[in-house]
Length: 232
Image 1: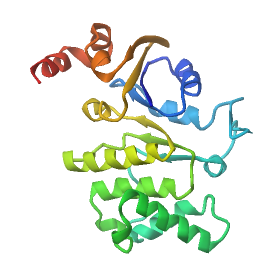
Image 2 (image 1 turned 30 degrees about the horizontal axis):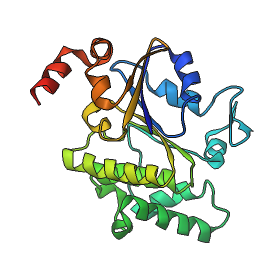
Image 3 (image 1 turned 90 degrees about the vertical axis):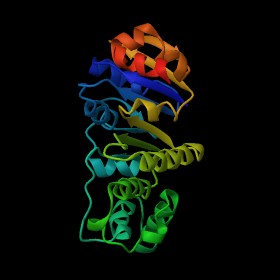
């Protein structure tokens, strides 16, 4: 798996996003309009996914082709059960109620929420809401999933749970793109980073090599990061 920090050059970044290896992580610097990248990934004019042109396709058609997504702000149906929330996502790809039900149960199992399937979404913690949203995306059987700040609002233990699920999904062969600024957590996800700055390669290497690179510290991490890491 490869990892990438994004630059402020939006069009160039979007092009590079579909030109790299199969499984990768992307990290954006503070202030970057990161959601532009995700929108570009699912609506790339003239670009193809699964032998289909993505230009102009509506979200449900994009999902049906095998691209799922989670959002920085989790949006649930608070009066529905956790299972019913995930079932909504299953109908993207399912051709029958029975198939959708099976897909929803399987997705809940993949994120470790099977035992809580009948709980009302409105009473869930942020950890469980984020896992539920991930399950909802998985229920559509994607080959590529785009995750927008999946660790936002999570405590340390919940971050560990989310990272464990992501590790397992990646090991199962799912392609994952993550927009996230929790660098300490991201360093645990991928063995190699590629750092882009203004559309050009700034640095490449292991997390340790990249995060101690003076050019990367200056462009993204800042001196405070370097001082904290030096004291570890």
